Length: 314
Ligand code: ASP
Image 1 (tube, rainbow, N blue to C red):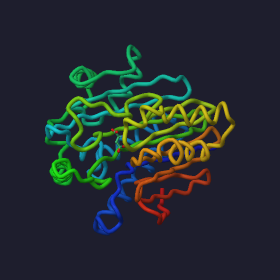
Image 2: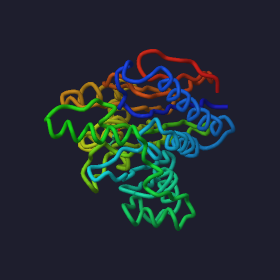
Image 3: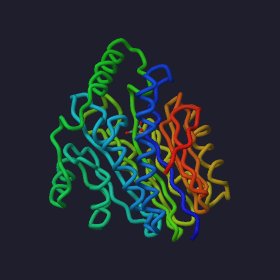
């Protein structure tokens, strides 16, 4: 069997280590490990990268610990508007939904749209209607809300009034996955509630193909997290792929170059996971931490939130 590889992130909106209890950190790591297991089971059975990234993202959308699906951020009107996308590196087919309000697992709607093939992007009520028509689970807004997100919105509104900065965790987060399957195909998927207190109708980078999500066979797959406006301006996913394809950089240098070079001067939180055509993975970030996990080509799995890396059973 050829190499398989998988990496996931639960966003770079991670607070300093003393900002959450040891139990909460352990729970978040447990959910990252579950996401890895879901994706890896697909790859190990000879399944497709695009199925693996969808399966991994669904687990993190269902977890309250990450800003996507259940536990998504609230916008300025206390509403959840959800963005997600998926891309198949083999065909360059992609699907994305933005500002959706009722879709339980937005990545599933993105996938259904990709399969449908009539459009790459669907937005707002039309995205919600599409998901429902495809038989996907829909939920009332209350399903997505957690106490932590309510508190984060109150904190961000207070910061806005006082002219102070919120913590990375109050501000944002996202979930994403990238994979290489045994047939040599790459895929990426990303899902988010965007940033806390975002403007009504704001669409971030996560559903923007080429910015927050990108996959192209023979090159790399990328899923980003951080202040989306800058990921859109620098077309981060495609930029990393271009540095590899046109400049011959390796994955890690290309990804680091974008995070530490292009994005750093803007003093924004930024991170990503990426995998290349040989199965190398990287997970650079510039915040105090990033929820992340990966499986090596030897089948060893690791999760981390800050510097300490924990091996987990698959
Ligand atoms: N990239 C997301 C957005 O801007 C937020 C994040 O990843 O923290 O919507």
